[in-house]
Image (spheres, rainbow, N blue to C red):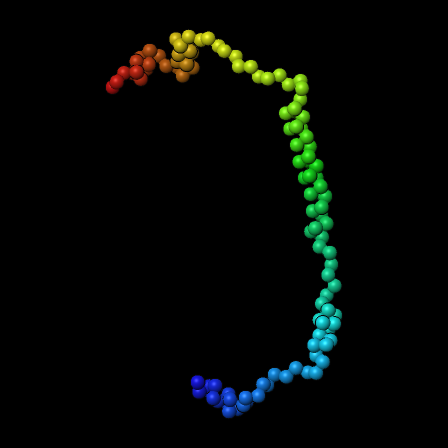
Length: 111
């Protein structure tokens, strides 16, 4: 509070900041004159062909998907049934993993 009283005694209640007459009349023109000219960004120039290429690739992929999806020559896949007895399949699996009878008995035992 003492600092405020000291400042008020030295300066008083008047506003020390004064704007010159007509300052804001020419302010916009002065500001525009002091700004540098804006150059086009090179970044956007090289992105344009890249965007076009990406659009062409997407259209090509969509066209290919539509062609394969709606092709009249397409035959539906039919499931093949194979009748294999469980003994043959088990023997083939045992041969594949190279288990002998003692290993199989050890796996099937309760111990």
